[in-house]
Image (tube, rainbow, N blue to C red; front, side, top):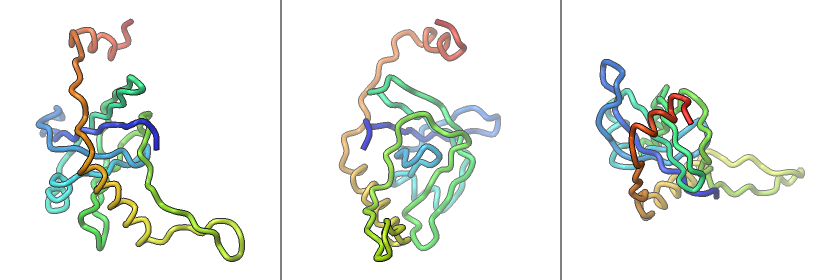
Length: 151
């Protein structure tokens, strides 16, 4: 597992502006985040336009990424994936599946049940993990300047 990446999920209002903080997620892969409960329950019941704040303090990295699709896994409604509109550059968590050797040689692909169990393990670990550290960004105008390409 790489250094921890924190994902904060925000609503996007009708005008396209970032709205209220809705919850957290885990960056599973560079293209997908996994919504944490209770946000996952809310998203499984009703859709929303979303935006993610993705932060990796160990890499001094942060980005804002829109969500292009909310995917509720069939037969596993507790697993809600957020497909990113752009590939994230932050280090992903990955899905902790165990690959087994195929009797014909090589490694066998994990089955659907094994992948679902691995993703649920990520949710369990996320529930017991310490929350993201409070981050002081200093002068916000300096950060805006950097986002716009300045020094």
